[in-house]
Length: 235
Image 1 (cartoon, helix red, strand yellow):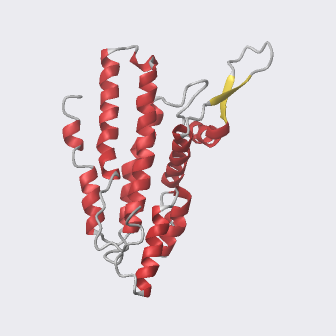
Image 2 (cartoon, helix red, strand yellow):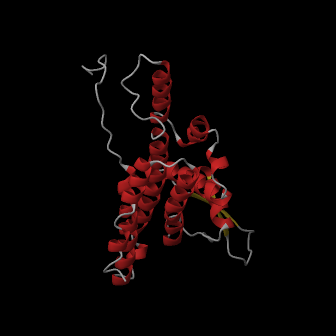
C-alpha cells in the first residue's frame, strides 16, 4: 500500500454485525412462510441452506459484537503514538483485530479483569455459543457431516447414528438437549432456531456485565431495530 508508512490523521469504522440479526430473522420467517406454501420445501437442498446460513450469521454476529465490545474500551488514542498509554492501547486494538474466538477470553481479561466465562453466569449459554462457533467453523470450511451407524448383525432394533469428526462435539451437545435423533441431518429448523436464539441472549448477558458504553448501547439497539416490523405479514 502506498500509505503503509504514513500516519493516519483520522479514521472511521463501519460496523457489520448489527446488520445480521434482522437478516437471521428474515431468513427464519421466509423459511417458515415457504414451508406453508410447499410441503416439499423442507426436503429441498435450499431449505438446509437457509438453516446453515442462519447458523453462520449467528456465529458471525456474536464474534463481531465481541470485537466491537473490546474496541469500545479504547477511544481516541490511535493517532497519538508518542505516548506510552496510546502505544499500549494500539497494541491491544491490533490484537483484537486479529483475534479468533479462542482469544476473546484473555482479551476480555485484559480489558475488564475477568474472562468471558467469569463475566457471564449462565454456563449453559457459554457452552451453547462455544458449540455454535465450532459448528460455524465446520460449515465455513464445508466439512461433510459423517454419520457412523451402529447395529448388531440381524438385530431388530433401529440403527444408532452418531456424528463424527468435525461435528463430534456438536453431536454430544444436540443429543443432550434433545435436538437431534437417529439419522436426522444437522440443518433442521429446530437446530437452526436453537442456535440463532442464543445470539440476543448472549449479547444481553455480555452487555449486562460491562461498563456503560453509549456506542455499544446504540449498536445493540440498532441491531434489533426492525424485529417487530419483520413479523408483520408472517402470522
